[in-house]
Length: 345
Image (tube, rainbow, N blue to C red; front, side, top):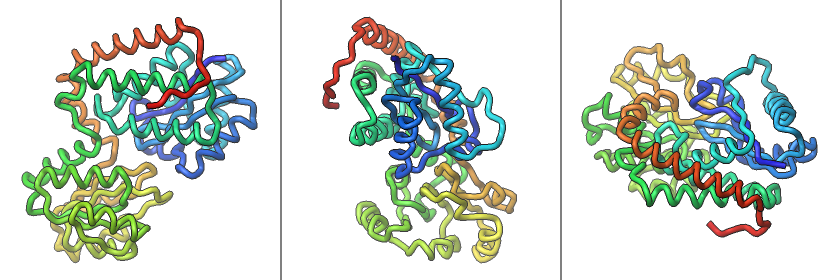
């Protein structure tokens, strides 16, 4: 049995499709159990972020059969009734391991060299490991991927000139508002993505931030760290009269803001320009709001434009990283043994 991966990402599918296949964090253990119960995987982990949804599995099936069944699983699990072709990619060894190592190192990210994916991948692995959905094969593969990612960060300059997805959002804000110091910001959602975005905003001069979240405690904790104010989640639309930038990143399964809700708010704020950055997948903001005058809406895919500006600066480093990964994958396969012990990260 070998490691296979199947999924879709910002490179293969638009956000409208990725959000259809996103896994809510609390639903992942049940999905992993379903994979095992169906005989599709003896080991498995699911990575679901705003930019990618991937299943890493050790399967008793031949690769082609495994890919066909895993595709059926994804379609059935998410009740998807549309067409699905090249948007879905799949890899068997050694390409699956090469892909895993690239993802861990940030080489397959929207912003090359970013480090957020390392933590997201580690969380995905820890969840699967803690629920005993991993074994010797995935444990060794993921642990080696984490070690390689750390080595790449210290041995190359891949992060030179790079920005995180959150910082890219701030770069976009600066394209709309030359200076951020005089503009108020509303952060909807108090998770890790929101926290990093808020800190990036502060590093660019933002002085007034308002935080809202379904959990008042989490909103208060983040606001205390940032020196920001909070508002009850039910009241956040009222803030649109005063803010110029709203960054939304919640786990809501439906749109929080649509044209019908925003249009009267725009009249109250005298139609001043409003920048909306929707980092959530599924999206928090209905794309229809962009039809309103003076409303500028950008989602995670739009951040690719900023990321591309940095890519040419790092091509030489990407080549160095690719060589390191190729050598490490070859060494892992040549060893041809996967110890059962879990190596500390």
